Length: 185
Image (cartoon, rainbow, N blue to C red; front, side, top):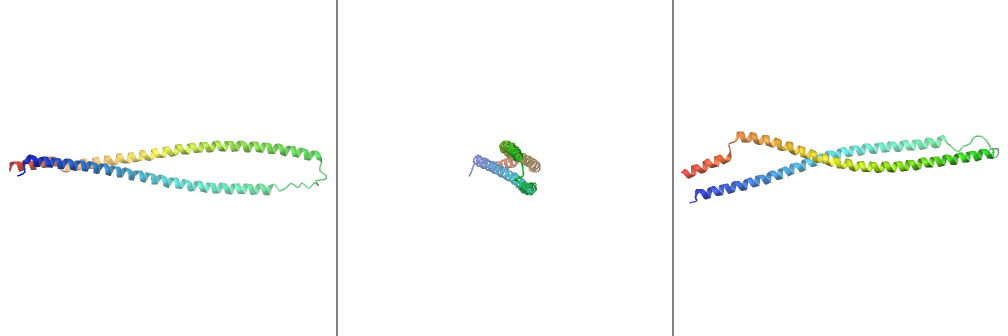
């Protein structure tokens, strides 16, 4: 004959094991929900970034077309200079002055080009730094969104559990009544 105390100890031990299993299951379910929420946020971010990349590619193509058109129009607008004068009748002084002005123009254009190249490099560095900062912020946003979703999930589960507890009587009371009833028999 099994004594009621031993049976009660077995029931308590079994109940504790079930509670541990329930807690472990609950942790695993929460971890799964966290990973699913994170995956959903990352997929949303991926779709957003892909759309932006496509838009940027379209803008790049449009800019390339504009550059090609500008280059073509510049070439057609300034063909080799033929001003109707015979090169043998032109004066030497005009050749010297045009040579000096074209040399000055070339130097000025070269200075402008050098400044633009330097400015472009600075802008590319800033762009890279900003891109890294934006990426870090996006990752933080994803993590915060996941945390918010998990808090909302816990809150919903808490409300659902409260509703269940009000509908169902406490199990430990039922077991205690059952054990008391068996010991009195």
